Image (cartoon, rainbow, N blue to C red; front, side, top):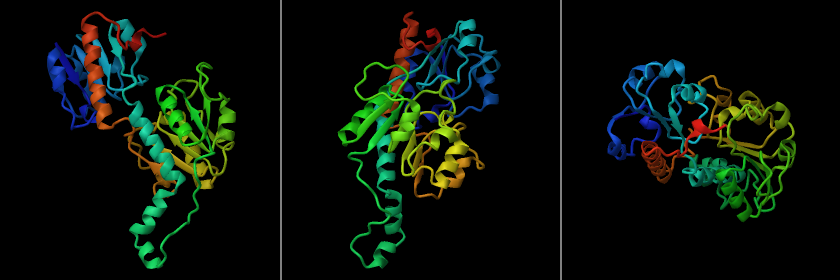
Length: 319
């Protein structure tokens, strides 16, 4: 059996692909461009991918392909209808990055809430030394305790972040699809935008959530609110978000995900790169070493289950 890894670099070059050898011959490519997919999948029985698009155009020559394993939870880059038609199984991995993403979410919120970038730059520039004062207290920052922390999307990551927010003394409110397991008050999307001092985003991308954070809803937010997206870039109208930050419609912005990754030089967020109220990171929230090890372990379990005829993490069977 031939296993082909198309973009191993997205899992990290420090992670060995050796565990995959237990299932057969392994071909590893650090990076694969769209035009290279067809030639690299033509003799593959199992395909391991991250963000590459898998559809009829890219898979038509993969005559031996039986299984696609995603090294991610989201699978909107895979044409499931085409895979069902071809009899190609598709497996994702879920829950492996919960702690890693929650950790970055908290890091962004704390850094933005305490104006950490500004204070760090004040010292690094030499201004602290020149000031002759023992401390600096501008820009003003506030405690999170007592603030309202809104959670958009209440899966594994949303629940973890809610628990952390609760532990810090925040009032937690949640906007989610299903009104079950109501540990915290469940509110409408409009209420979430209006009431949140901190709003963190953990929802999957769907036709209903695409572009949901638009100019109309951003205008409902508090002027000093902090908005953090660690879910999917396309949940945001990115031009509207950039304008909201520049105009002071929202107070702080953290983002780890983008509609196109990496974003281009003319992306709306490039206007925010030097703004101390903004923290942009390169889609790394999920990628703590421990999380990546778990991800590879889950992929191996998915392959093993498939070979045994079991239906583990089969997203092609959903719906």
